[in-house]
Image (cartoon, rainbow, N blue to C red; front, side, top):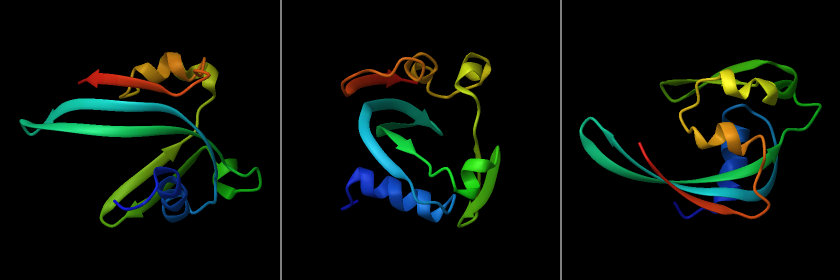
Length: 111
């Protein structure tokens, strides 16, 4: 809260995979309606284009793990050509990442 979403993305990438990133344009705003432990939630996600610097250690690795408090995080990179074979929680990404919209799109997703 009280932080611009693009600045939050930069901060999170500095904290978790420990790298500076270049945040590009906002590609999608996604409203996700879902239940967790039988409680309804409404999540609003903002998806940006982002570039890792080529000299970043994270960029050179296929996988990077770290901790955020007590939560273990695992970052993995895959060739875009392999996206159809991956299990992705947000199915719109399988199509969308292959052909990014030219303007920001608002999507509503019901999990």
